[in-house]
Amino acid sequence: MEREHLFLIHTHSIIGKKLSVKFECKVTSIHPAFDPNGNEYVCVEFAYESAQQPMVFTLPPEAPPEAQAFLPLLQSIPKAFLRPPKTYSNRLVIYLTPEEWERLPTPYKVGDVFSVSIDQGGSITVTQT
Image (cartoon, rainbow, N blue to C red; front, top):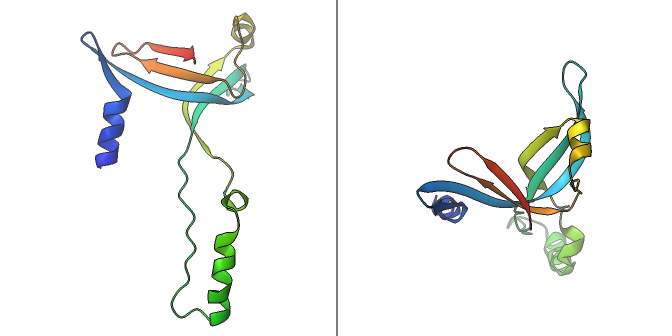
C-alpha cells in the first residue's frame, strides 16, 4: 500500500490549481487494426516495461542430496541467461485512420520514448523525450 501511495505522489503534480498525471512510456507496437465494419486504423501502443520479480532458487528440505549439490551450479549461471524476456504493459493506445497517420509530421517509431501528461480537463499531451 505504501508503494502505491508513493507512486501516486510521483505521478501527480499540481500545475496552478489543476492536478495532472504524467508518466513515461515508449512505443512498443505499431500495427493495422480494423473495427467491426472493416474500417482500417493504425494502432500505436505506448507501454512501460513491467517490473520483473527476481528469480530465487530454493529447494525443499526433503530434496535429495543430488539436487542440493546441483543448486550452487544453478545459482552460478549468469542471470542474463535465466532472465525472462522483457514484458511491457500498455499505458496508452491510439487508433489513427491511415489518412491521419500520413498527416503526422513525424510518424511514431517503435522504441521512441515519450512523456504523457493528462490534465484535469482531460487533455492528453504526448511529448517525445
